[in-house]
Image (cartoon, rainbow, N blue to C red; front, side, top):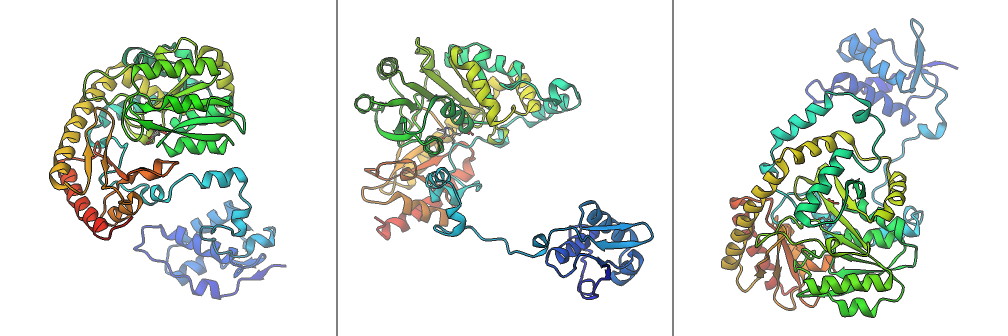
Amino acid sequence: MRKNAPRLPFNVISLNPDAPVPLYRQLYDEVRSAILAGRLKGGNKLPPTRELANELGVSRNTVMAAYDQLLSEGYTEGHVGAGTWVTSTLPDEMLQSRPTPARAPRGSRMRTMISKRGERLLSVLPPIRQQGAGKMLPFRAAFPDLASFPFEVWTRLLAKYSRNPSHDLFGYAHVAGYPRLREAIAGYLRSARAVKCEADQVIIVPGTQVALELATQMLLDPGDTVLMEDPGYFGVRGVFICAGARVVPVPVDNGGIRLDVVNRNSEHARMVYVTPSHQFPLGMTLPLSRRLELLEWARVSGAWIIEDDCDGEYRYAGRPLASLQGLDSENRVIYTGTFSKVLFPSLRIGYLVVPPDLVDAFIVGRIMIDLQPATIPQAALADFIEEGHFTRHLRRMRNLYAGRQSLLLETARAELSGLLEIQESEAGMHLVGWLPPEVNDMETARTASQHHVLALPLSAFSLEPVARGALMLGYTAFNEREIRAGVRRLKTALAEAQRAKVC
Ligand SMILES: Cc1ncc(COP(=O)(O)O)c(C=O)c1O
């Protein structure tokens, strides 16, 4: 049965001509909310457009546009000349307003619906990381300098490909990545990182996280043991834990991952995750003798090595070190890299280099995660590399970042003496500052964030309790003024935290 709408919902509508949202959209939102909240019921007739326009003091076109939108989304039905009704076919349960639940607390019903795998995942991300996510404050780590990126070149390349609507660029294609980009990456890796590879071993993914996800899906079973540097990148740990693997933390010393501990845990070990060119987050380099020993261990135990080379390009003393993969003659290494640190993170282009025998299997696994990476940015990136912009940008950034590291080092040593012992690094995008013994780095990081400084604590990356707390100070994304101001704020925060004797 069709009834005229009660007057009330329309009387209380107030539209704001100064709001950034168009008037028709405001009216649409009001009517839609009234329907969902049950104030307008199925079969209620909406006022004629002319009448409502007069009542609200808006043009008839505004009302007609709002009605059209409601009609096309199925909230109303109607016929020209006969009027518009709230549709009566919407299921009743859709017509009740339900408050959006806030985040489900631990132990709530919503949380109990989460799978065991999901619960394991939720346990991985340290709250300190969630706190600072998205904020571009000094000393956010692992972030490149956006102001220096050649956006004119990048925009020209994107535009060039966007104007050419071919199936090759706009259709489903190239599961493992755009062929010219795979060629360009293979060429770059061979010459700059001494990776032994052909283009068809390169599989493009949206970043390291997916690279690890793919390697884990194809090579690990639930219950398998994975050895992982401790401290290490928690994103990677999350992937292993989610897959049901048993993660064994392996401590690092001045030479990186400790091989004596790796050897002691060989039984059932299927994989080891390492960052040999620049241990993340502490920054040491895995020496040749340990590289060879690790490769031999993998050969004998039949385990895979994941080499994460996420910032191997940034080496400020001498030439970038050759990769571990380049030393491997047994095809035990899966190499991963990313453009997040050398170009910009939102590009979401990373890659895996897999041994020839695994390529076909990994490509099938890649489809199961997502059919393919986005083509246009890949085509633009292929040109960016082929035309020489990539190596030029990298060279400029290496010089810029070396200067920024020196500035942070000098300023911090001058200002923070006794509060933070900052350690020089030959590579990477952040410095490690050690806190006085007994000072808690999690608490200190929290105090720092209250002073608008983002300094990730070492404990957030560690599975075992840390012997001494430390903070990660990224410098690559900050200019001289920001670095100096950041150090001043950090000084206040450190003094406050240490006065309060947070242990
Ligand atoms: C060691 C390490 N690997 C990988 C990544 C993430 O890289 P991507 O943006 O490619 O996912 C990070 C992020 O900071 C990292 O620290």
